[in-house]
Image (cartoon, rainbow, N blue to C red):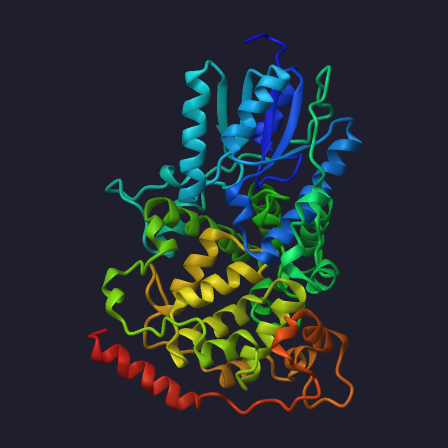
Length: 473
């Protein structure tokens, strides 16, 4: 390997230039750096909305690199094959990337690293997607944490690396390899007519993420603890969209939260806990990857979930036509914006898994297709938490009542009015946008009457509790 051979910088879910350990290491080497992004089978397997949002993020990263005198090389195919081909074309002697933690990515990356090292190619992975590597957080008996509160206590005083600056310069190779065109990948094709609607609500790229964080810390973090549960106000950071694709690092968010706490802003501690909740999800996915595919609590395997995603109740839930206002408003928010307020996520998940007795996998898969801020660990843990089958889960007897939750968190019904058009003489734009975002085959119109509830809330709760008790929960 020549001391001046290029480094392939393989971007994945780390679409930023600052606070990027792998990119910083590549830049500091002084060697030519060739940024690459590979549309491999794992990227192709993303749901419609996450894949659409990925395309926006990759495009923005390419523009940022271009502004620095570099470029992003796009290739599609098996990642190992693509990297080996690029090594042949460029003479690269090193490949850097940021670590991912889901089982499929780990298997892919482990295989690639072994192949490259066997050929004498340096292959190095770096942190950056998480603040705490999952294997470094252990209980006193060297086990892993299954409950959030002790996990939080174990890490809250840990030192978190300070954010790294973006490289001032990336040395270019003598000859750039050819790149495919992003437009030829058609990453947004599955979104059909909803793509333009979602695009209007996306805040894409590193600059937008930094601005979003700055605005949140300046204007909203002080009241975050009390306002984050109110879906009708702009009380959250909105950073899940950017964290999911690594357009901002959790380290930067953490240090901003620490500064806010030092300044006496009362909501900062709660914000820090939410960042650690994300870390907890990855901790669990690393130690118990079954959380992605099976009931984390194995005793729930015998629970009589309705597993047919085409069941009329599941279809009504997906179409946001359950007749339960909080549920339908939250689902419609997702179709128009690509995201859903956290309180809404809890309500719709509880309703599907408890009132309707539908399997959490039905909801998890639907979110995986519809959320632009989809994250494998957070999505799985959130659904199993709501269903009661996961670690540190909402207890089986806690069945959120969407009606009383609406009275508590949307007293003036501003959230419902924003998202449900039926029954309003002059519906707002967002409520009408739902009908333009959903599949045409649903054949729904704002002129349709609002449906009656598909289940009586008290009856649904009683049926759920009876099912739990009959199974000994």
